[in-house]
Image (cartoon, rainbow, N blue to C red):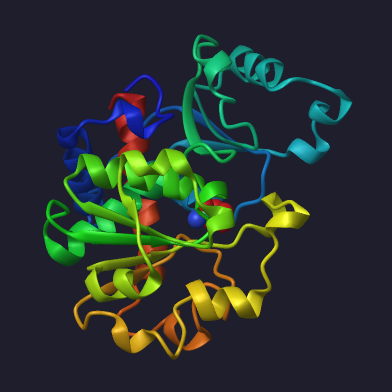
Length: 291
Ligand code: CP
């Protein structure tokens, strides 16, 4: 891959190759990749930024962390010009998170490999792949599973990437959420159902963070109301199938999307998703760097 920017680039076999390579890394495979990589995060991150850094260190890459708040971005430098500068300085690859859903489109010919670490409400492809890895590890397949994605669908780049990829991998996709968070375009890959139907049928119950920072005043729903109607709570937890797993890309709003008690319960794979992020990002970096 020259760049890694969208789920649209990946066919079934590409996804399976990346999952299997990430599992190899998890089982102890070591590898060294030459190159200078810069991490450029223009939106906050705990997991994605740190797991890309860990992946880069494990691969022996030279890692540069771009500090946007103390850079010439504050003087009006554009993303294109920041990247052009990185290219001139000898950097080979850039891991970028940005609020613009299409930020990467004008950057494809700068001469640096672009790895999308989250683009506005557009895509979060590395999160989607680590989610596929987590599901595959659990069930040995993705094809034929029912996966429910519940929450703040219209503001979620994770929902967008996962809906596309789950559909491509042969899963049945169900969506749950308040009408004010419904996203019409998701209906290409799945159907809207009630929380009760989702809990009754899902092999994977995937909860999404309520993204208050992207909401307008009209979209506000009280946290208590959300938890009772669309969260995994003490009343509806018994409906979850006994062999189903619970996922959430995190950060979690405890007692909003999921009751505190269930974040680390035996059916939860939320911590495993974080762990798998390092190995999947090693596989992605390897694929993009061509070694
Ligand atoms: N899941 C995820 O993208 O988390 P961060 O925002 O902390 O990177």
